[in-house]
Length: 86
Image (cartoon, rainbow, N blue to C red; front, side):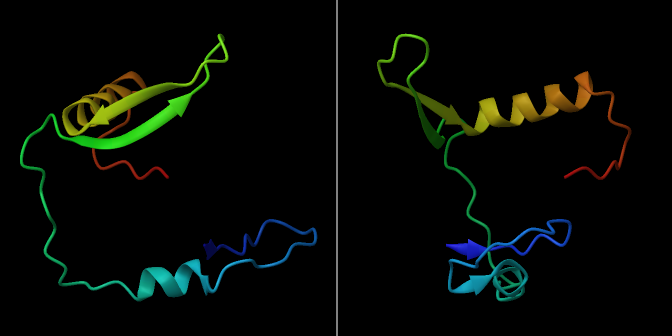
């Protein structure tokens, strides 16, 4: 578990993890050699939902679908070139 201390939160709260988010990010290796998928149809995530029936269903996201969805969202939202959004 990675803790994030939100500066906009004014209420009480306790940290649960063993490392804070900024320290975790700073501990990354800037020379890490990224691993690319072998195939654009390889799974990137597996999500489960109960839907309206209450029966669990699995949904597989693949690299191609995630890329196309991200590009479609950028077009639909009319994001300008080099926009910075979180």
